[in-house]
Image (cartoon, rainbow, N blue to C red; front, top):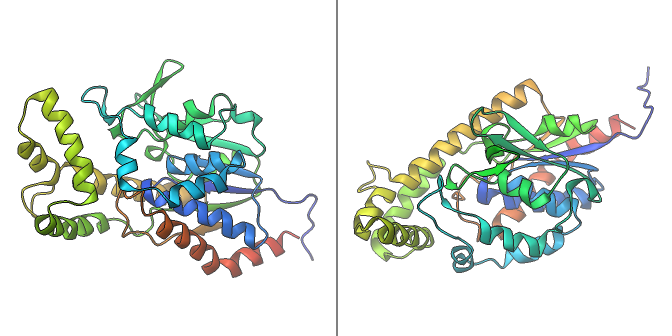
Length: 318
């Protein structure tokens, strides 16, 4: 007996957290469109909220063009450092930047149905944004602990959505998606950052000037001014004295990788999507946002790897 369909199924796209790996979402959306899949519903967490908001507001091509040309020097210039407030970065400069690429509308007024996830700091509850200011919700969803300062909205302190729901399949379902395509950026990443960081540290000793060193040197300068400590001491705390003693950045990045991997596995086991797309980007570090070309192309490639499954799934609903 054939399956009877009473309506055209709504396709939802759950865009996961993963910092710089998140530019892969751009390639995923572009390649899905190439094979005729245009999701009506999109939900994003952290970097997934950034790309999702651009897609939902028909600004994805503009975002694509900008991130492909993004340099490390520009990234540093967009960082407004602070030594108070629960994080290194205030995020106001990033919001100013977002205004150039994302329409400052309410979420409910967008051409596509869209939602974002943040996490309440006091309780750990996930908070869904399906209406209200796009930029306010976006700033909350990307508030990575230890990096960005928390955001206060409606009397609640909010942090990164990846802490509670790294791949928001449940939000897609709640918004009415019949089919959910999930993009998991956290597959096979545990331990990878530590190994890559060790390789980078060896290069630092030879070159004494890499992208991450430039970023954290600026952090150390800010801290030096505020705390009157020598720069060398701060850098040792950030990077660690040797490969056997990880610095602050390595600990932070590896811990976030472990957390997101475990939460993602648990959440998707309880509420599995119909399709999981997993870009292979374990070589990208937490802050390597200037590597957009690599991430976007891998986003496209992961769709092609799953193309037979995607086509079979859609055929089964028609």
